[in-house]
Length: 176
Image (cartoon, rainbow, N blue to C red; front, side):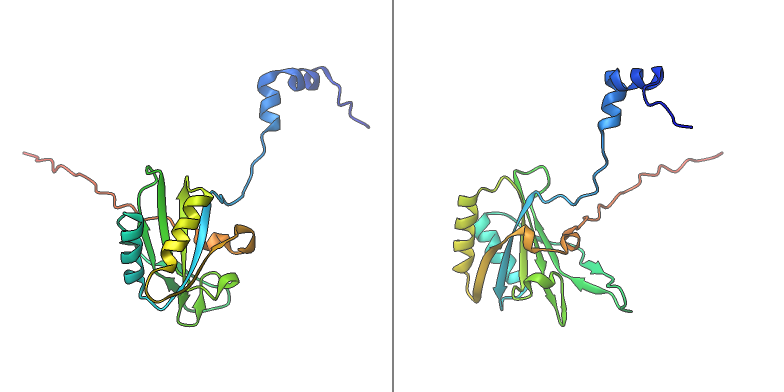
């Protein structure tokens, strides 16, 4: 038996604005790509690179807990250093990821870079060009370039949630 899609209830639901807007909503499971990436090839240690970035950007990079990945088919975890400057409330905030850890690579598509600078916020093309030019002047930096996000297939590896320390205030109750 064939159902009629023009029943009074279906006509009402499709014409009513509340139900029509509910029907049009779709769930998207996409990674946000509202950031820019800069690859840096350098023999500098990560803390020295962040020191030079602090001077260039007038910010304060701090070391975060390492990014830990568990690759499929491997028994051991892989760790990559992460540094952060700025907060989500700031106009711009930055993350520096180590791209290499011994034989492991965070983003295999850009294996020629030792570090990845992730820039969140309002950073236009002119600012990005001047940032890249400034990084090229760092000692021991061999190469730096903007990385097109289309080139990165493993964007999910750049998702880093900072652990927030939550303190519970417990007031001891005294029983008599």
